[in-house]
Image (cartoon, rainbow, N blue to C red):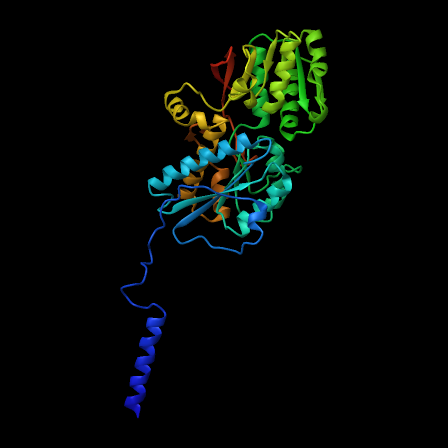
Length: 408
């Protein structure tokens, strides 16, 4: 009887092993790595509502990319996405990060704050991303900054309005970071350059509904006042009802030496068109939005337009990348920012691993990291770069002319 029972138990164990796929020859190796990810997955709020929580496969790092892929500022979001994906593909082709393959999932915020918050929550709770490449758009960064406090996932973005990173009490939002010079730095750079090159009287026209435009206004006028210019003409406008010729006529009548237009490219094109039609012959100064593709969208002679950029487009390595991808990228400086963000994440993960708190601390303390957009040193007290220079350009008709690398 005991012998019969032993045989039966043996048979049951064999059958159980077969049913569970327990054959030694067919089991998958425990350390098999996934193949390199070369395609960005893009999700919207609607597509992610029905998903359940998922865990990243062993050996895979999931990075979120929260951008406007459709909507008014889609050219910026798509450009960041393309640069970040190029860096991901490059890293995956060379072993990933710490031997792990990187997968990037892009979430389309559509330029809408509700979409942005929902996409952020999906990224951190459903897709379990380790870090997020954030937007270059201040309105979207503002939308997610408070929600981000409830989670532990760093957002490596480019919203240059300091209030996207710094609370009213002076402390920082623990997960909000910006990897390009702040609005304060960028405004002071163009103001200092204008003064250096002989401008003495100024006008400013800004968008009252746009956080980006507002963030650039006060530092510019404050810098001028600190250097003896106290009679600047400053006016705001409502973009939905703006008559730019009427708005700009007082500046032309006053014959100010320079007009500062800290506005997105779409408005900037309308403003420069209005100034040309009004016969304005002074200098027009702006920030990143005066960089290409402003010139091609405007289409006319831009010779009196000055702007800043994150990159020297004529530097050999930079020029080679622009030659390779430029025709497909609307805002080439955002492409380079997206690329640098991934490389900064790589550097920080190699030092701190993937633990969110440790990773956030490593990002806050980046020092002397050389990227395509400059040497990055972060200030832990602001979560923004310190001492980072930019390049000042003007146009010769439609051709960008790099004048100098400049800091206020």
